[in-house]
Image (cartoon, rainbow, N blue to C red):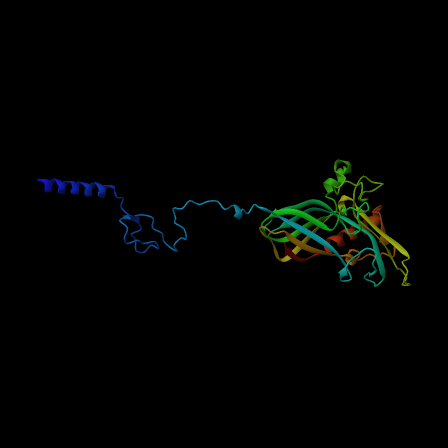
Length: 305
């Protein structure tokens, strides 16, 4: 009787423990990549390559994979003349091999954007004043303007750079220099880039001297002060195989402007080299300058830091 009671207790304990044990789940399909022949309950079959993490693992968003993340870029428009880096006060040859030098060169660029293979354009900067004067501003501080354009854009590939040569016609017609802080390109306090006879901005201002008769003496000044909204020009700079804006790196895009080509189709030893954009004749000289400027900006390369 005692042995019977002991056996009954063991049997009941075995049944209770067995009833609390959950059957092993797994895939019982031999064609699945996660087939488990020891499983007792069929579930979670996967077909194709076996996942590196269990398929029931929660998916956590990747903060570092955000394609909307902005990254710094810097576009430089480096001046060149006769195949060399351009500097003020240095002697260069025009397309007729006459000696000339430039003493002043500034121009506005507006609506700077990067473009991809679609019609999408990404804003870089609204407006910048490009100034090739390397001297310091107010005797000791850094130059207020230079030849670089800074901005932030989304990560990705871009194959075109859009640069408006001049002041956007809306801002030019509005002409409200006092609405901007003193260090803004459209505040004319220090830039000398507005007209004294017209409430508009100068788009491009170039001044210098040329040896008109080949006697090794600069005997004629030239100046090109262009403006008016109808002279606003769009440069579309192709970048070859494209520019990749990468995560965690600043993208440095180098462009070049051929100074000599800006004067193409003009004889700057004549009245064609002296324009304030006043009158129909001077308007055409200024139109040539603005068109040449937009055509003479070329892509050189890209680096990262």
